[in-house]
Image 1 (cartoon, rainbow, N blue to C red):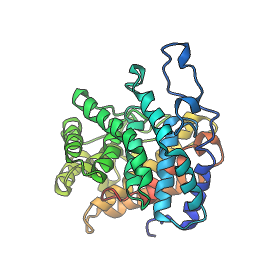
Image 2 (tube, helix red, strand yellow):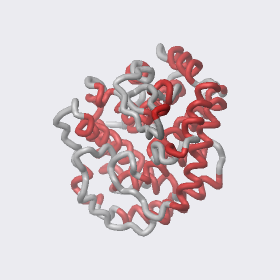
Image 3 (cartoon, rainbow, N blue to C red):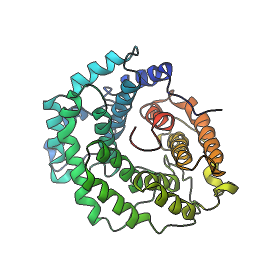
Image 4 (cartoon, rainbow, N blue to C red):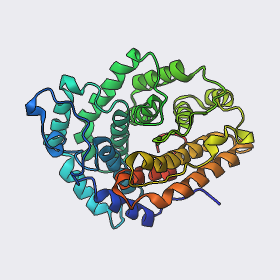
Length: 341
């Protein structure tokens, strides 16, 4: 069986899900510090672009998904609705308000690094669309987050290896697509050198702590995907052989077993559906980085398919997963393993 394809039918299904929640203001889980009573404001007032989808970062990556779906299927029945949404939301006044929010001292660490990476991933995707106006309008916000990476990474002595939003490998990997799309060689260099500093000497990863009860990323696989994205192919293969040396024996076994989800109304437990989808994304990208004749390649491809098969039926149904899971399904199905695509 070949890799799944982002068909127009599937793209429209995913688009309808996202269009149904990116402007849904409540319920909402703000990541907001109040310095005084004047800071007690509604999500829409705080974030006039990204106020929906339960939280800011989910709204951002839902917009990324809509941009990707528009690029893949520009004539689908959802395409005009996506364009209308972007024209309404990506306007100078609203983007300026998002930028102003970030200028407050209390927002220095806002959504670091998960939201930073996703905002840059969105900007990269917009740059690939024929319609240039949206990329231009969001550029000031993207530049703020790019600068935050430039300022923060030299200060970050240690990586964060958890399976949730704070994972630093994920942030580097997503930012890499923006650096490529904008021809920012200095940022690409910084991302690569940081990855080598944090992860370059890692070897024989046991993955013994995976999965934790609220993971939506594999700390082992996203580290490998980060290094695949940032290193030259030969350098990556040498590192990968040391990092996960027993993949041909299906070890570490925990990475090959899809996670069990017992309650999709519980937001933390529902994260595990995302873990299955994000593992599928990483397994697929890592498989594509291996030579055609490599015996590990079909093993990794099979792991990707099995994780996707478990995760894909649960994209919608309860809002705890519905507000974000489709984005990870699109990553698993359509994000180009070789780079920004």
